[in-house]
Image (cartoon, rainbow, N blue to C red):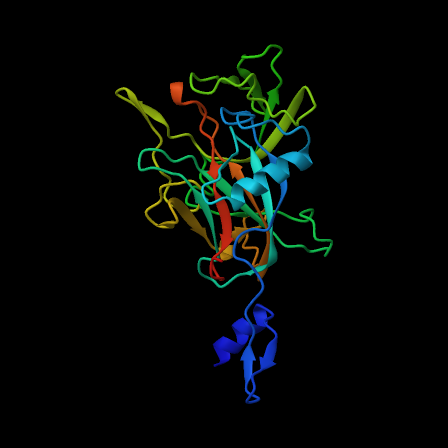
Length: 295
């Protein structure tokens, strides 16, 4: 009974009385699925601008919201650092177990891991402008995992050209075009600047050519769009990875000890090209609270 009362209090379910005067809990109004996209800023990639090209960030967010609300809609985050930021119509509570899921499309031979971040609305303004906390996964803290890694992407001078990039470690390369995606440019149409910079946590790339097939092996746990044997679940026609708010860490690596979150960010965690398959890019089909039934 104490556990039930605690959960009802967390979900702010208002009590009411039936005709016999017995107090009953009302149906919760919150929906499990994320309610709003606050930012959609992908890195360049083969799926960017493919199904229409939004002209502004607001249009891009509206397009992404429709995709995530569709049963099989998909949002690609492009190459390293590409991100989407979503919020819910309620606070997602930290239970100590798995609290929310990110739907993706990983396969046994193809994982395109996304780093997941969470935020509380600390200043109460309803916007994701407070502190982001990374959810540590299996690769967190390893020497080959780079925190605060930065990549700058440059608008191509001609249609049909590869996208040049430079990172903060003196390396450079391109997001190459592929045969099956022939839109004029992979550079987001709603980015007006001649270049833009994306930052985040970078995982060591695992993609490799196995004979004639490119393979993207999975990471152990803790990432979106990842064929993990630990946190992956299957349902509604898509794979999903489950996440624990309890895994959130501060910038110094210490536990953040968050009781709840209001916002989630997913960021492509690998900078790599897989030949004719194109760039490694995290795909997101939905983000949902596991504490509530899907409705």
